[in-house]
Image 1 (cartoon, rainbow, N blue to C red):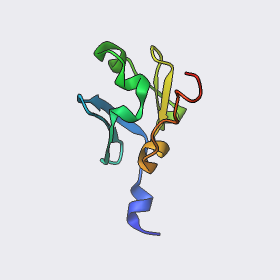
Image 2: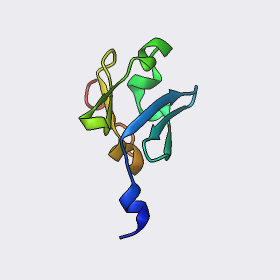
Image 3: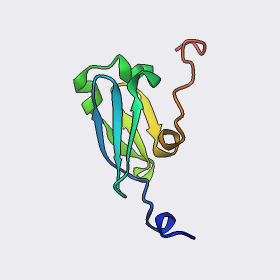
Image 4: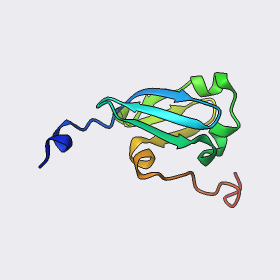
Length: 90
């Protein structure tokens, strides 16, 4: 097993937004950046709503209580956008 696997810590350390991107800092120093448009609830949210996030899932997830939105570091690392919510009626 490589040393990178031994030192990987995919728990969330920070969450930041720009007009175009969601950037999540991990405990191991990595940074995940994805287009905010991948997550419609986040894309439509106010700065205040985006700033009101909580850790969940033992630190491996992010929850926005005002938006009823949850993301996991596993999904972010996989590059998984939100499912098509329009088709689901949301």
